[in-house]
Image 1 (cartoon, rainbow, N blue to C red):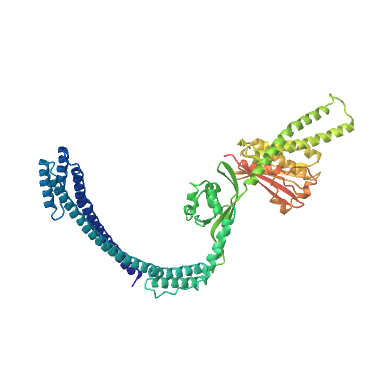
Image 2: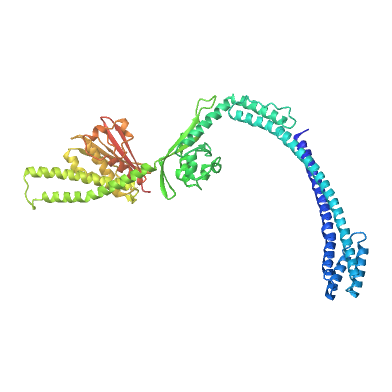
Length: 582
């Protein structure tokens, strides 16, 4: 018999017995209540009435008021007659009371009444005794029935308690232990109750599942998923936000740090296009992934805007973006195939905060230095003036050295101030239509004295007509002047530098070439970095390593480009590209 049927029959029978027990108990209790009520209500009341009449009769001779009380109790007794012969005795007593009323001093009548009252009392006491016996028998019978039914219910419940839990729990305990073994990757585990009436099918299904898991675990797929799980765990342990997308730009994974930073959940992003998500989420929008993905070149990202700024909880966070394309070579093919991209956001907030603090410090110090240095320069110019006083040759040499050092310090502080403006984002570009030929000529003129001192020839090659360009004249002049000054610095005496311009489609290209030592290939990519100076050159030439970095920032802020070509021992050519005015 199945457990379900056993439980149904057991509980049904138990319920039926409890119902019978309840009915029998109620019936027996009602009987006991009825018998007790008969004893207490009827016979007891009669005894009370007789007692009250006797009390009144004890006041012999009886007064008129007392006869009224006796008649009242006689009337009550006539309504409370329950026993055989009680009615006749009550009538006699009433008749004799009337006779006593006529002859109040007749003691014989009084004695006769008292004798009849005793008979009534005796009759009710006998009745009470008899009814008490009936109640006792009813009580014994009730206890017997209730005990019998209660014991039966107890035995059935005990039987179910002993047999039923074991029938259910033993297979479940075995199944639980087997599941634990399976969870511990012991896929050879099996359960042994396939012949159980109720759990046999479950046992067969479990054993089939364990067999399939064992086969699966021995397959390559299990190894792949295991490696995937390890990779996911490692990615989640990285403290930088990471997100992966397929070649259709749909998100396929994201680590916990990315979810926390973007305030998104896995359900909200998996399978969603980044093009769609970027319109509703600040982090995805800040990544500028749409622009990067739509400007692919040979399956790689051409992403120049690597730094991301994000405002969260009232604080600025900075991330350095790295985008890596993922490719693989399909079986049977020779060429790699793009399958997606991984974007890593390295948290550089603490470094950015230090950089900002450094920038503010340099800006403050440079600003404070510039005023006294300018004052020193003015004082030196006054000292060099013969109207102030004459100086001997030795003093003039010292004054010239001090003046050159002052010029160098003033240039350094100016460059530091410009760089702090660039780093803090306070640089302002005033674009307009500019006659670039005039700007180039002004830059040449400002460096002419240095060229004459080193006897360097400045050769120019400009077309007759150069179109105007879109530029900031002041910043463009500074860039050209700085590039020409560098060319003069790194060229030997009695040499030549060349300045040329070419109109190319929508651009104007200006090139400044020297015949110096040139730049070694390993330094080409770093030449525009802040504070970088080529090791061999920095010993021979004074400078801060900021000039070219400022040039790059100024030109790119105008929408242009700056580049360098160089060969060792042949010289270098710096070119700037500006957009022509339409």
